[in-house]
Amino acid sequence: MGKLFDELSKDPRLKEGLKTCINCGTCTAICPAAEFYRYDPRKIVDTVQRKNDEEIEALLRSETIWYCGECMSCMTRCPRKNGAGLVIMALRHLSIRLGYFTESEKGRQVWPLTKALNTNVLEYGYCVHPATFAYEDHPESGPVFQWALAHKEDVYGRLGANYQGKGPGVLRRIPQEDLDELKAIYDVTGGTERIALVEKYSRAKAEEMGMSFEEYTKYTFEHCSAGHFNSEA
Image 1 (cartoon, one colour):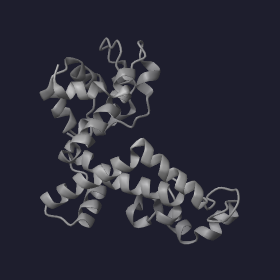
Image 2: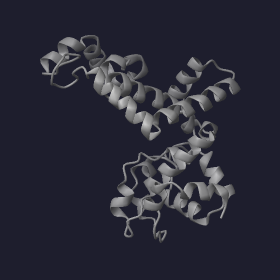
Image 3: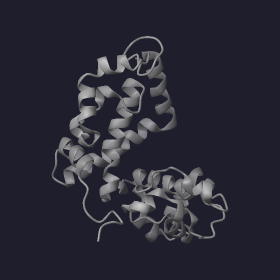
Image 4: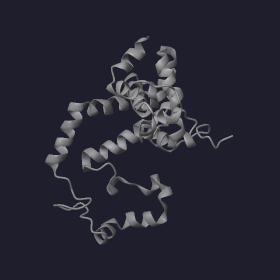
């Protein structure tokens, strides 16, 4: 047993997700991510079970642990009620703590995702908000949605939303005291510290790659190299 496995074992998600695995492969068979990515959750669980630090460190630095969508289909099908997705969460958490996530392309995407989602939550109270959704960043949303964004006040009003308004309703303005409470939850649970850690290591990686932090953020958000998908030769 190595130090990395010892650190991993402190995470309650590992204890909850890895009880009596029999390596049957049901998690891989049911996994939506495994259908598209070169990803096998059974192999990841098998690697963790071996408790070998070199192998665990390779996982922490790899693309592999970032393919999971955390849908937890694995737990619903596992005959022993293990959860490969929970094991993945524990691995991701340790990878971020140690800064290893910046060693993989998919791991580096943690920064733009962290920045976008948490900015929305802390400033607007929503995971996704029209005020910060830029069509230029999501051309796959199509021209109809581009038009809807350009006319969002009218469109959302017609749909019955209370966009940025006071009182109840979809997309209402969240009161500042509620946003302050959200920030306090982040502070107490370690969310604020985690955001700072992701930014710290990401800034160091941007410097290593010879990019400004703005360039790095855009690059990691947009760039996807070959080799990730099963459909690729």
